[in-house]
Image: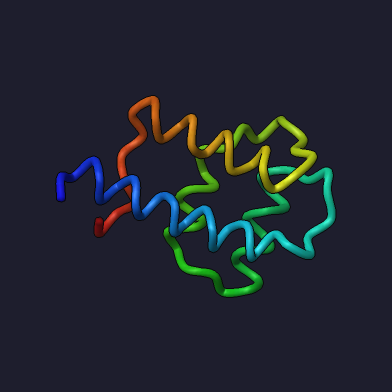
Length: 84
């Protein structure tokens, strides 16, 4: 498995975990609200790192929109989470 394959697999797992965490979260929402939710729920730090790719000024209308932006940031060269 190449490093690109490993990062892609980890991204898929992280996005699934993020969708689960956001399942009952009200939308529209902001990056700050998502970060606060993840901290309050004691979600893994890698989800906070992934969420850091979101635009702080934007309002997101769905978990899919959140995950699409994170995927786009990863595709544009954002490095994998620390420890990966």
